[in-house]
Amino acid sequence: MLRCSLVISAMTISPAVFSLDATQLAVIINSNDSLSVQVGEYYAAQRRISFQNIIRVKLPTNRTELTPDEFGAIKHAVDSKTRSSIQAFALAWAIPYRVGCMSITSAFAFGYDPAFCEPGCKPTRPSPYFNSPSQRPFTHFGIRPAMAIAGLSFEQSKALIDRGVNADGSFPEGTAYLLSTSDETRNVRSSVYPLAKRVFAKEKIRVFALKRNDIKFVDDVLFYFTGLANVTHLETLGFVPGAIADHLTSSGGRLTESSGQMSALRWLEAGATGSYGTVVEPCNLLQKFPNPAVLASRYLKGETMIEAYWKSVAMPGQGLFIGEPLAAPFRTKKSD
Image 1 (cartoon, one colour):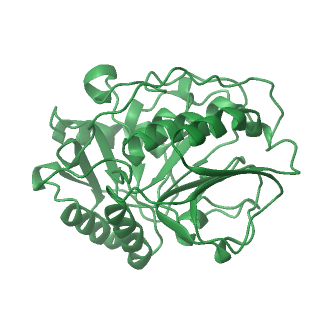
Image 2 (cartoon, rainbow, N blue to C red; image 1 turned 45 degrees about the vertical axis):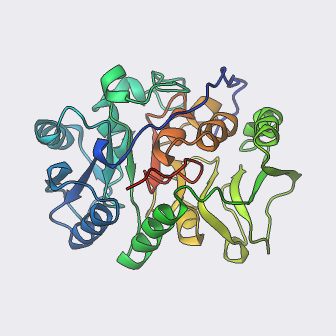
């Protein structure tokens, strides 16, 4: 991972209003994968997603990557079955998670386009959705952000879904942990921590900006941002429902590959409700990773997990978004 001096700037952030809900989200299920079927159907039931917004496709189950041609046919089939009111996708699987040089979540959002991922170690095409006030990304930009409900077992996926649903409107008390690590290359995101601290203070969220490589034996994790290849002591942490956590490194989005770097799945298995990682070498350009200030501002104003996470990444083509898309702990619940 090469060092880069590019800096993200957080734009003015307007208050959120009620935005994405279950009527605007389509669940995509891999019919070849019994786990995907089980997870997708459970999620649809828990989120009361209409059968009209459940789309079934046939994907290989023994590969982490699709070719662009394979994906093109799948995307065409999905688009033909997607109603115009749908603004975002939930993918009910952990693998495959890559299409050529793009993540599968970005490929579903933009369509496969090498401009979003090549060359890997330089700036790529930016997302028009970055830090946008838009509540309807497909209507306004022609993109449908996607998030994978990723788990290696039904028990893991069910726990993730339940955390997201239970988080809704809970306004949880918790702490934001911003870690400046000894890994100079991966610690570049610490440059935006001062702005993030101001966001958390404004929203009355307790924040600890720490110069250390890890935290342990705390049970109030609401946000955890760090820069390391591997994060230790996750088993000692307690995450509140709706928590967000990720680590800036090259291969966090390679969910099931042995890369010598921690998979973003470890965050979900430890109890987080959303995370992010890149599937090909991005170098350490800040625009390719979540901006904690933007993410926190959007999420704490009431946007859903998928909205806040997607809006926090300026160049998301190589990045994989995983978690429970509709989790919205800081949005007042609507009456049934």
